[in-house]
Length: 474
Image (cartoon, rainbow, N blue to C red):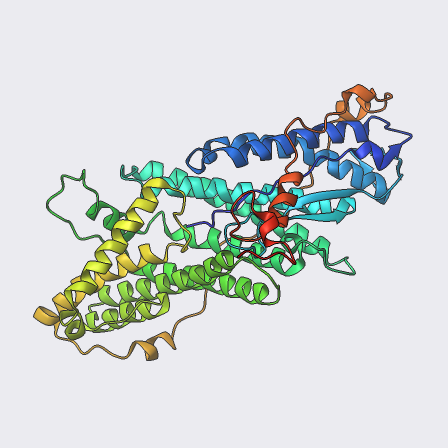
């Protein structure tokens, strides 16, 4: 379900060229070394096959946690505030220049996003913290992916995975909220769209929406029933109908509506930002639809438990409309062509392969998976209503207009600024050793970017001269 963020890479930077400290002269050196480790880790992570990247997220997280306290120490020195009880005298020798690769901006298909040149320590701090938030979201994605594997997890394993994912989402939300509050002091938006106020605000709302929506996963038995139904290794030939308490069904619907409201706010904020990646914008819209569709489904479950099968069917048809799928009644379903059913089967198999590979899984925010759950219940209830209940199915549009308000579940926690340990600050009082600075050992990809930008789109390697101005190809 979570969006598969791409971690940005960065160029090498030496803080000793831009900062000087009389009280802690080794601070710029130590910060340069910590940043060099982060730069190398990000570049190595980028070269790892997508299927193996989840297992190396802990290494990226550790490098970022080691580097961020040095950034805040430099920031404290520039702003004149204390760091771990000590005053740091820091002088700006020349303006800091850094380069980060934008991963949330629109790019030419088939070409890697360009690196954006930024100035000031503030830009470095924002990009580093947003990268840390991406890592938290990717860790939550890895946890939730285990719920849809061929081997079904136990109830305890499911609860553990959901609790861990929820914590990661809340950690990411705390970082984005901190950055949004800090960005209010800016007089102009940065050149990189990734750290602009609208995008950071959208990410803050999105992570809170994701943390809210997964609160219903632990006690929602229907997705697990659909996974079990398509599990080839399952030996359960007799299917037992899932049960859900009436009160919790209505509560889950309100939680889903709250998640949809946060996703709608994120979508509105992205609308104010230009050049946002289409895949990310589409994911936010799909997430809003998924949350709204889940709310309709739970309200339908609540109605069906109260013996209102006709109303429950109407809620499920409304869920299909909210998800963006064609809402067919029973007669239209019977008239559906064999080709349409075959296409649906192909789509389901393609989605199963995405889950197995794990790479493109979740790019639709779980919309297709929720559609499967709705279809399963709709087929069952329509059969019951045609043979037993025979209730009138009201208009789904009128029911959706009477939906209750959303209910908040989480209280967002503040981001706690990490500080250096007292021993580390004491060691930085000593003069620096020029040979200790480490800017990273991985090769810089700036030359590759320049070559790629110079070559025309679709040009065969080595034929650049044939496309230059004033030359004739024929």
